[in-house]
Image (cartoon, rainbow, N blue to C red; front, side, top):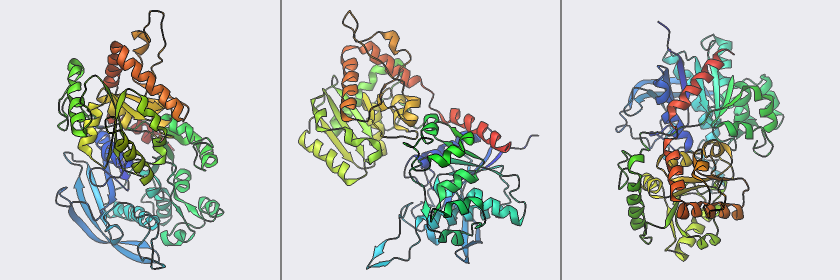
Length: 503
């Protein structure tokens, strides 16, 4: 019988145990899809203080495992659970570094003119990665692939090379490093080499230290066998100076081993036919029932209840990357209502709240994290906005299309890979465009990152919505029919793993 492929999946986040953003979604969903391919995949993440041990039935399976860090032996405890509803193993590492109420602690905190004694994220996650390697040995688990995610676990390839100098435990193990967001790199001072017991004679370490620091992202890129990003377009963009976040020249040296695989979404959780969070379930066969969700959403938000007016939604982190500044007061001139949901930088939160206060019949700003309301916005909106400056993958546009909500997105990263532009044009008979032109489209896209361009494309979309209902319905149907499943992405990762094994 052919032996199962063994994958060790290292991440700082994994939904539903611990999640801040897209990384948590990927680490919680991709392993489930990979397990369906008869792969022995095991997830490892820190046991943060806020994780509900009772809810997730987390049990201690080993204790007092020694991990060397900072010139001393630290003791960790190992806990075990499974992804809810599945048998996919999840190992959680307990240590005082992770007894926190949030995943990321940030840099050292200045208090009373002195730094606190807390450990910063650089040390915490280098320790976690080292501990995960020790944990695999304790469990006698020899992975074929160690799959590391973002800078937090980027030292794993370095650590197994160090281990292989002592023994051959990881001799046959290959590494895949996934970049979710190149802008977050994990930069540490040279003292991290000693603290983490990195090989100071490594050419990659020496080259990195010439810049005066150690960049975890650089280590992951150079030391892993395969590098991938979360969309094909983003894999190309990061090779350019414009999107390379200062690492474009480094990435170009590795370009033959860089691939792009589009993220998926949980199509069971995001399903208008079964969604328990929305007012009215619906599908293509009864697409008109979607309107009930708009009316319910308008009522909840305090907007004028009107089934004929277009409702435009945006669910996002309110940060500079997401293009929030493109939504100006000029947008009040458009014949539509807006709803914004999310949290982030105070200046964006205050700006959106200001719009809602000044124009309460047209703008609603919900400054909070609310999973239920997010589903209701996906289902109740007619249009969904993704005007990002850059977007490695993006999930919002795929979720929106799953609900028959037409996206307007900037042509960048995964947005370009998933949203197919409808090109409208005025015909001699007065129509905006022909239905034939809509057969391959599922939304609207724009290139220029400017308020003027964004305004124009939204205005064009509204014209199609109001005056060409058959075309609009076709765009909705095309979106619903799209394959955004993790199964499709998992099949691509399986190919990538097999490619790494041939290295």
